[in-house]
Image (cartoon, rainbow, N blue to C red; front, side, top):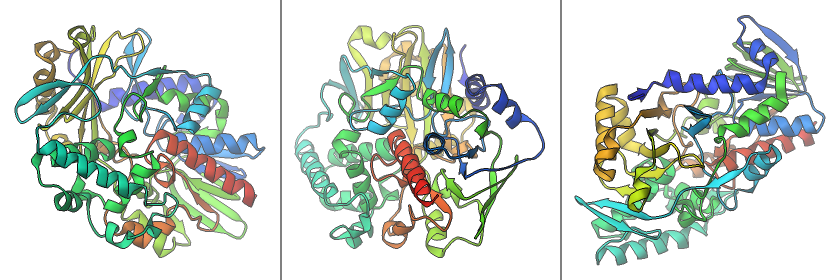
Length: 484
């Protein structure tokens, strides 16, 4: 089938899979109109990797739990799309690599295997109207650009190690680092177009945001939390090393199956009230009471819940200052991965919009062939405002320019714009603009009475990644267990 898959179809595929794996009881209960109520030890808000990990640990510890999820599915920012013949492709978060120990351990405990991202063959640099094939991590640039980029990268690597991942605002020169953007740092520390292009590309790829959007302190913290900028931008042996057989959403689906009827779908939380006796969590599906609540959603979305008593100014201010990245994923599906037969591995870097980088995203057996193209930051905001036809023309034009005429006619073009998702509002994660770590950072993980915070944005390690989400859920569950 040719054409852009509508978001409704994509979400529907995920919901169907979720219903099949969670089981009839929770799916039926969640899908019925009307109100439910219950009393548990802990209420968890959000059934992504963070919320499901927290709930799973609490249940294992003998606690009663209710998980309230606004969507009609589990998985949060992970989502599988069915391609037929039992094959899936991920249209949300997908990669894992060395050091991402907690999500990998969680997957192994659920019987989920990994496979390597395809990297055999040459990569493409599409720069200044020319295409160059290359191998290795850093795309080739002429001098003096190459030397300029090397010294710029060395400066970033040196600075990132100085930022503590637990309290970034305590770093040496934290105030100065948090008072500038990555853009101003780049302009002050480089002089060539090529060096600036490559740093821009790395920032867009890692954050789905523009260098002008990000606090330099936040970027350095984020790099450090993920093992460094080189690790986060690497495929083989790096953060994009592997994928899950069956798709990344399978981790959430299998956790949800074990949790069963504890999960309530279509239950956006509207109000959390806390007092001496416990917490009261009101959702569209009913009201639950408990001793503690874990809010396992992005800070921006957590800020849209009504709290009684009101949140402290520091925490409320934080939620107003952590926007989500802007990312659209395009998956062009072909009968075969034709690029492999001509010695290409599907990875590209480009200085032309809308697609700045691509990957081979084919399933483990290589059939069908799938090219993944990312549209992020400013490009995503511009493209997302166009008609479906205009988006399709631009995206297929980019794939064709990079891979030739065979790329012009995929059997399916899948589109997922995460900024349009009402219970996500952007990917990959929330990021901190200048000044936010300094003024509000201490409120990111600090509980407010009986309210605890989880979500990948709260993780000290692999912040923004699936591994960070799992770690945050485990931390929050441990906090609550100690209080109970």
